[in-house]
Amino acid sequence: MKRLWSTVFLLGFGLGAVPVAAAQDPAQDPVAASFAELKSLVGIWRQVDKPQSPLRIRFSLTAGGSVLVEEWLRGDQPQSMTLYHRDGPDLLATHYCPQGNQPRLVASVPAGGKSLEWTFRDATDLDPLHESHLIALGFDLSNPGRIARTETYRQGDADEHSALQLVRDVPPGVDPG
Image (cartoon, one colour):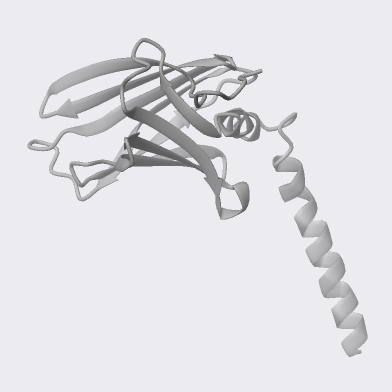
């Protein structure tokens, strides 16, 4: 009897896992496809127009490849961090800001698109009237060697927009090809 229940349990578990695996297929799931595109950012990036600037943006994977980490560095000093990950049917970004708040944004994911736009969902540890906080974030990933990154911060009722053109940072003496 014990063996029968073990077999039923394993069959039920195995059958229950099939839809989850299918939902992860980038060909059938635009969120999985968009997250796969984001993973292509792994590496270090710099501003196109300011190659001598100490600002670098490093993308890496953690948590078994389920989270993309974006770190802004000035030299070796970390400035901020944004974590990108799935949450069921959503693609979320949580930004850990130097102001000490943590806005969470949710992406609109176009099918087959190379552009992603996140909008403010909520935040932790935020005084919205007195603190600047991230309310919008975007990537244009249509050119693999050069990405556009946009963001909008809000303080009170004033918004500040910025855009960066980024290329992969290649250390001196390393062949980029």
